[in-house]
Image (cartoon, rainbow, N blue to C red):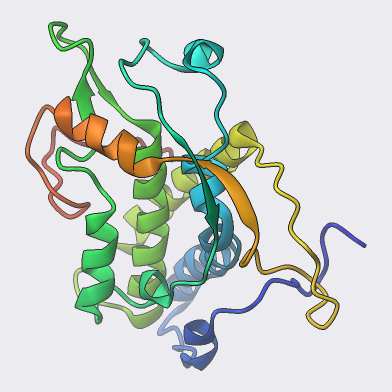
Length: 235
């Protein structure tokens, strides 16, 4: 079986199939939409299926085994849990039109937005990679719909710069996690969906609780973002 195909074998998201294409008003707008929407579709169709286990809930060894991956030794042992992925369309809808979707994404973030001071007595502030990765995926999701539907106030040029950062950041975090779960190929589909396969995962809830206990602010969700809490971007 070929690893990459001209026609992806991943199960398409119904919401994306049902949405009409919006014609660009000028060449500049068309260029921006091409840069953002097409890559975003590819990222969403693949990443929404596997990002949770591959990036955030990747299998973990003992705390000592992971010391080299951490800026400081955390005072937590993250439990290992078994999970089976199931498609949750709530996270795939337009967050600008569906308040349930917007809230569902915000509820994934620990209070404090993953910004922690550790050890507590030190001045150094960190952002947990798991939350940064979720932030990037949330940004891809939000900017995809904002560009597709031209929501008011959407800065497409700025979004393109941010998405370039997120595309490569998520690429590297996926490869770093290197999830080795075997996903059965569906002969009828000619590919995989990622759903229905048992996985060994880190307990994200335990990590989120630790982050809240060590938070440096009380900000909630992705939308409360002060100037002091900015994620990187590249031109």
